[in-house]
Length: 323
Ligand code: PBG
Image 1 (cartoon, protein in one colour):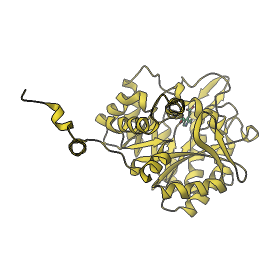
Image 2: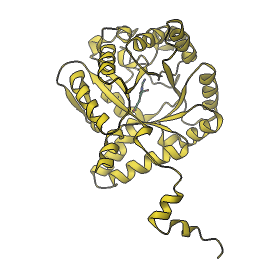
Image 3: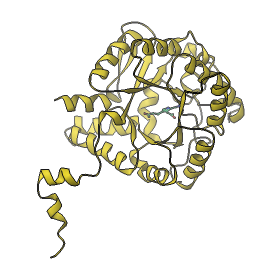
Image 4: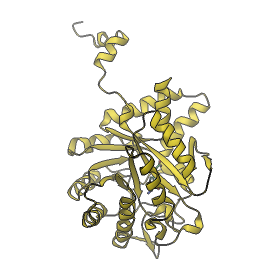
């Protein structure tokens, strides 16, 4: 045989030489959950090793994360039911839980890349990402709310805004509002191809943010489709997005590749709560090797074309590297 592919696999040294993809702490954005109160660290049953922190504990946790090499976080707020209403008014309250925390984080960790979530669901009594009227999610009415939320977050020190709501035209709307108010440097990482996925279940437990009625299929994408991801990507790029995101990641590697091949913008992917929970549950049972599956799942996402990965494993990856 003239050609023997196994020659390039014959030793660890040679395997390292021919390795095409590798992971580093620079690749990750760590999603974190914030809740009101003091000295709170509430475990999330379906997401082992992930917690809801009150601000004081969040700051301590972030110092530890920074020590482990985490440079970027995405912050999600958890609100009591009593703070929620139809128009998500708490979402643009500059003195509320979320914006106050953004300011505190930014002043304590000025170099950290601080990403926010722009969507109504944590603040909405309907549990939807948009404004609900007679059972319908209204698009253009939602944009005004997202715009106010975006400005409040930008004022509070956000580096990157992450519109995760899937309303049409939201990237352009938010970009325009930001620019009018002088926030030309605030970036937008659009949840470009966000699917109506069952893998978000544990996240909705974490935030108590599941829809009170109906589902998210009129705004999030159908898992059966790939071509409309190209429409979303084209629109987001035209509307001024700085990054395009695919979500979930593991079951949508083809979509990551599709966007990578069709856009010059950086591509990110969100390894969502359900993807994390699956590896956690199986490894707790001794059915899968935790660290190997963590690495393989992340490598696959990067190999597919995502150079930025939002993952709940970020801290544990850092701990593994330290070992
Ligand atoms: C909602 C939002 C969701 C996630 C991030 N932002 C859930 C949803 O769309 O219902 C999911 C993240 C995860 O599952 O880890 N704006």
